[in-house]
Length: 291
Image 1 (tube, rainbow, N blue to C red):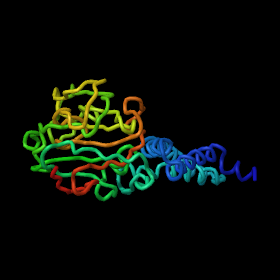
Image 2 (image 1 turned 30 degrees about the vertical axis):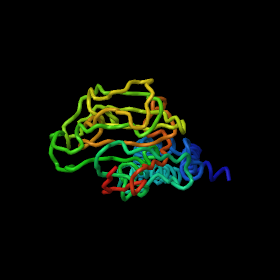
Image 3 (image 1 turned 90 degrees about the vertical axis):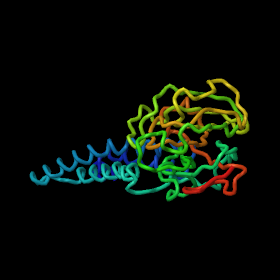
Image 4 (image 1 turned 30 degrees about the horizontal axis):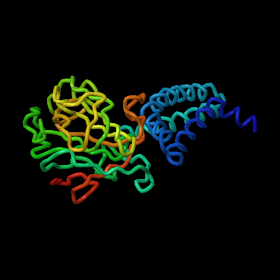
């Protein structure tokens, strides 16, 4: 047994054990451990696995040329391949939603629609087919991108999109844990962003103690500041084109952890989000919502 372990390599065994623990956390432990493990597997592990894989390929070739044993090199190469594999998920070459069962995750939150006029769901829902940019991450598992006609026009002018400068209203009652609107709005379809979230308002929800995030607001438009109490229906700000966005839209999602106290935005557990007063409470991609 010891000879087999030595042949495989103790470091390879340790790395394989760590990777196994992270995958177990994703599929069976869930919660914050699963969310953090998913983020590490997709964003960090592959970029460590690639050099490990390449180094072992080179050393394998050298060993073959010298007619030396190659068992440990094959083991190292296998571990490198396993570590690198999640890059296919990161690049959406494999479109796989973060494995969270919507029927088992709590608390479930139903909130007011953030607009007072007709809008369209650009991305949203439980299925990866309807919610590709979001469902593949733990934190944004049930996030929405909301637009208005006209949208997806290809224009670089933010003003040419229907949702630009539209008023946003708080969907919930709670306390603002962070409000920011100093980032410049960028031209559409350029994605020359400064931060991923852009101008935003984060609210700690009174009812559940969880958090609602509203991103990509317009510069100098946010009417609330950190520490303010808000009620559902209160004016928050206006839609802009700040952050990692291809065109003006409102990004909104619900998560368990305080977004101001996590290392990376993806290291949070996303929670289901429904809307009251509309026909389809979890509207999906392409849904037209008339409040």
